[in-house]
Image (cartoon, rainbow, N blue to C red; front, side, top):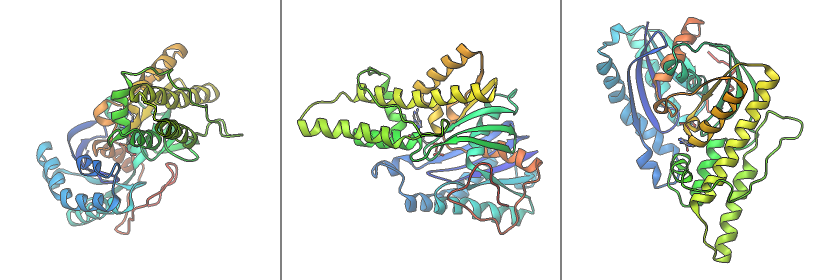
Length: 338
Ligand code: KG4
């Protein structure tokens, strides 16, 4: 079954054709990164306008590259939540019009579910149940993936997402957007023990995260140094901060896996591309004899292939939307509105 998938939740306009949830026939991503760089982050209205300009061409290219006509497609899948609302609306309305005009079922896909599904494209043998750490720019959570469309949230961030904390820290350090990615490159050259950061705890909720304290710490270090006229090594500070963030993520996952008794761990989301986090989690899994699945680097960030993968399983479970489908800026991974 071939699904045409569309993604526009943030600053990438993407379309893909995916067969049976596992085989990518085409994947086109039009990134707006260069344009948002000058603002140090994503400017929402600009993102929406660029999606509106790019979406027709991106979908056309995805179909052409897959060697498909619209008549070969059996369903249209689209990211409908969570994300920037104006950006999501472009993809949702486009997908709705296309599905209606072509007489195809419309499949609504939750953005974080699709990040997890990126792993089904990388690892053909991967099947639920498994435990998953989702780390992206807007979300950080630990989830039990009980089945392809059955999720249970074990813990989540109370404030900033890990990616958001990395991006803000990078911005304060004068590192260009996208901060997390550039910090990763720089931090590889620094000493991760050069600066000490506190270990954040959420009282009474051992599986919840908090990254705002860590973010404030790094910002304070930079401001204090600048007030005293002291030089800071961006490599050392970046490496130490990255190490602190990865340690929090890895430590909570280890504790949760012990408690919930999973033998398979999956990472998902943009920050799962991080070299320090990958290395730390790999070592932890080797030590505990846990099977680890990481998405290939090209599928960690936003793309539509992962939407096509999850869309297939949503379709099989009967999650089909009508023409009244709306977009939602916020929605839990275990909550589905048709
Ligand atoms: O999943 P994603 O592409 O978008 C959301 O759905 O939020 O994640 C974007 C986030 C950004 O915060 C970006 O800085 C971060 O992923 N990121 C990284 C790396 N590559 C992207 N963070 C750390 N290391 C990386 N290599």
